[in-house]
Amino acid sequence: MPATPPRTPRGTPRSTRRSTPRSTPRSTPAASARSTAAARPRTVLVTGARGYVGSRLVPALLARGHRVVATARSTPDASRYAWGGQVEWRTMDALDPRQVAAAVEGVDAVCYLVHALDRRDFVELDRLAAETMRDAVDAAGVGRVVYLSGLAPDQPRTLLSDHLNSRIEVEEVLAESRASVTSLRAGVVLGAGSTSFEVIRQLASAMLVQPVPAWLTSRIQPIAVVDVVDLLVHALEHDDDPVGSVDVGGPEVLTYTELLARFCKVARLPRLQLPVPPVPTPLVAHVAPVFSTAPAHTVTALVESLRHDMVCRPERAWGLPGVATPVDVAIRESLRRRGSEEFAAQRATACDAAWTDRRTPVERLTRVPLPLPASVRVTSNIVEHRARGALRAVLGR
Ligand SMILES: NC(=O)c1ccc[n+]([C@@H]2O[C@H](COP(=O)([O-])OP(=O)(O)OC[C@H]3O[C@@H](n4cnc5c(N)ncnc54)[C@H](OP(=O)(O)O)[C@@H]3O)[C@@H](O)[C@H]2O)c1
Image 1 (cartoon, rainbow, N blue to C red):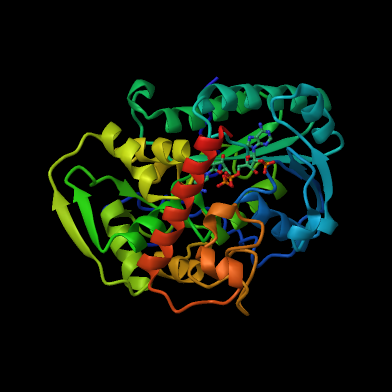
Image 2 (cartoon, rainbow, N blue to C red):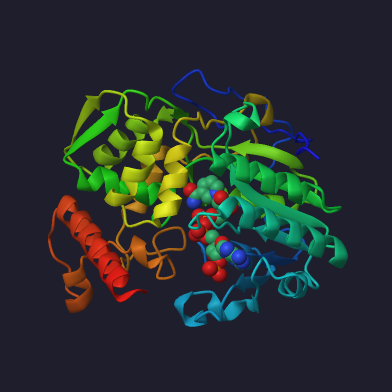
């Protein structure tokens, strides 16, 4: 069954730099989750709670008075999370029907944040996991499911990358459930620790001269992680607002090249963008992982989606008043260092994937911060990452 259109589109963010999805006029002004009093407390299951979005969503739900059940595939070290002791942890491999059934037991709503993009066979795995969740939700009579999906252009499915096709397939599988299901489709999520953002940060930082392929003109509508969290919280608190598949994005539409330049500007990195002749996307997809410490299959999958415009479709755009963090502000937030006074849930946290750690190997060993340029910092981490990979290959593990 295809994902149904939203019943309550609230319009795109307030302003865009290009001729982008202009707002459908906002219907009844709903205050954002940031500003309103908490709705009736619910028991919310956050799957993938240790992941980038999940680890930021959990404290937001707790702050709103909800009870949170958090899943992890292995026993978590609860002390790594500021909120680790305030949730009920349940072990759940999304491919194990018994564990999934146990995870959804007694919850009012499920936030589905599982994906296996770091695996070559992610399409198959993500479909199976979604089917398992759909069946468990129906068996337990859960009323609400919210999934964070990916923005995709209105194109025949055969033309979409595996990555975007898979996001939509998961939406469709979940939508077959009897629960009220909403998929929020987001593009690049801006924030320290977000895979797509970290890849941009690493490329921007490491390369003093940035080759920009002529075909890299796709438009994107990135969104700040704080906004994603607000929208997820709202959707988890309201069974019918929104319903179906809706697009969420920040207030600006730009190209990847412009986003790279914006990052450099905000981070004060003097870099030169050099137009280069067209290079086949598959070649870029296989070379890009060399310049990042992110999981190779994830980078390849993301790069294969670069050819698509990822902007909100006007008729499907959804947002909330006051939830439209400007791109520059989101980038600035992401640049705050770990352990700084401003350390907060939406910034890099101790629970982020190890590869997002920006300290150099020397800084990690000595615990002494060094005044290094970003290019040296990122390059040394990439070199260390490659050396570890080579060592593991030699040792056969
Ligand atoms: N970050 C972005 O830029 C972005 C943009 C648009 C949409 N999204 C979507 O948002 C969702 C969350 O993204 P994220 O950035 O938070 O991802 P993430 O940090 O990579 O986290 C993924 C989570 O999936 C869980 N997972 C993977 N396989 C699993 C399995 N077999 N069983 C149970 N859990 C499993 C992992 O659990 P463990 O911790 O237990 O291993 C992990 O916590 C995804 O659906 C993604 O497509 C993200």
